Length: 110
Image (cartoon, rainbow, N blue to C red; front, side, top):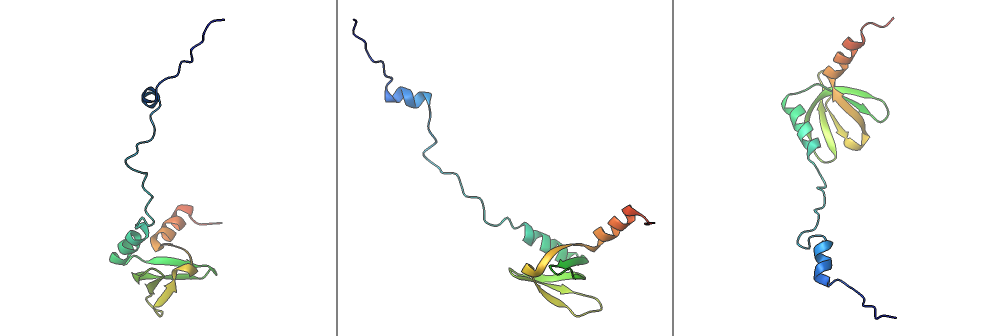
């Protein structure tokens, strides 16, 4: 038999072949809040956009948003009392013009 020599690359060669992750910076955690909700509310408030707010129980309220905070919005209405609505009780909301546009597209129903 002949002598066999184990060929093993040095550690520097291994690091050159298979680079590890950069040790300098870690991946940043995504932001907890994107501020999209705030931007949307501000845009609707500035334009006094008529909104339809649908509550969890199915009640539809129409008005415009006067102000908001973390937990609630204030909805002003023309011929009804203004309301303070908790956000957790809102199912969804949309612009009143979207409802009119949708009805026009559907046309008269027979």
